Length: 284
Ligand SMILES: C[S@@+](CC[C@H](N)C(=O)[O-])C[C@H]1O[C@@H](n2cnc3c(N)ncnc32)[C@H](O)[C@@H]1O
Image (tube, rainbow, N blue to C red; front, side, top):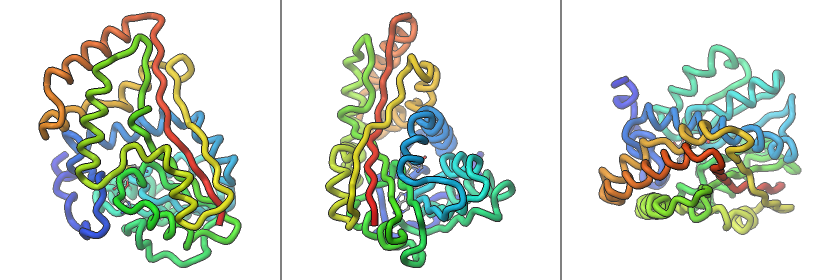
């Protein structure tokens, strides 16, 4: 799959730089795209009802910002046969991947725009619903991103933002102490690139400062007893931890300890795995 690598790093204006680049965040772009897919599947049963609660329905015009390979985009298009979706993504590789995956089936209802969430170039007061999933945590100025999303939203429209908080990322029983080391290393690496990996708890304030009102906050969760333990394996993946070791943020010994503990956990028939994301929504 060398074609994927060749397509990355084409355009990325410095002022729109983020702590997420599919070409370099993990050991390979292909692995990272697979992880994004697994992460969408993991949360979808709980996440989708929160979108409905915030106004996602058939027939509307919606915009998704930082849509990546388009796994959430595809689910929304499939579920709503009359919805029109504009997907905004800065990375040309991911624009291409999303186009290849979705254009044939949904091209008449889907526009994929290569642009930054900070300056979409889209007209004001246009969309009934906006979704920004796992993007704000990578941006040096998330309030500016919310302001731009608010600008393109129709008056009365709602915008949903979903992010992680890596201090509360994944909890297991039995407890795996080595995971704290892994997530500490991840947080340091993202922060070094201008991101905020514990942004989850700050979301309501950021939405308010970005100009949205009637702001709500909720936890989106996935539990191994409900969705199955295997769903967590692909979602956590090994691509990012391997890259953290390569970049000097995590020791190989710590990663080995995580892998061993994870194997032991899976063999324990009473084990439990809980993962959370944080969802905040506001109205224009
Ligand atoms: C962690 S991925 C999430 C992708 C997708 N939203 C999902 O939930 O699977 C972050 C995405 O945000 C995109 N991104 C980063 N900075 C951006 C910016 N300034 N404008 C638009 N997209 C951006 C990345 O290229 C990537 O596709």
